[in-house]
Length: 130
Image (cartoon, rainbow, N blue to C red; front, side, top):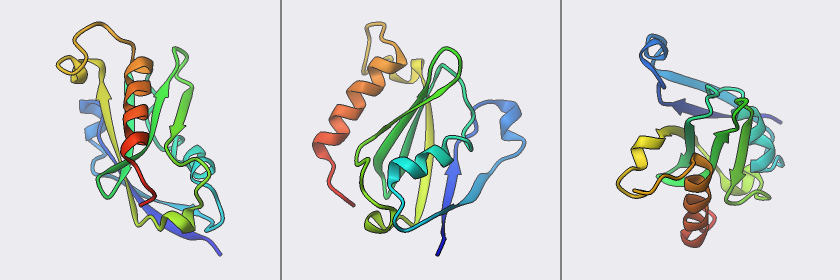
């Protein structure tokens, strides 16, 4: 039996804001892993190489999505093997960040991949299954 999860995301530019609010419902199977389901979610998000997407639920990051120079999404998951049923997610929020959003925390020039890797390490250190 399929279930649905509510997904919302930020607008990434003025033209994208025309279609706001960005909300959809995506199907999932209870036995499906979070990693597997995020492959479906990545198709919903705008793909730009200069964006870091923080995927969260209940104000906790559960994954990060960045794009390579060809705008191919790369997904990093905090609990990759957890099942959707185990996580019992009700809604997902996708917040985007640009490089300049991190200028205070990362004053030295860092790529979005380096920033994402640092955030992923920190999120894993403080995370437990929700």
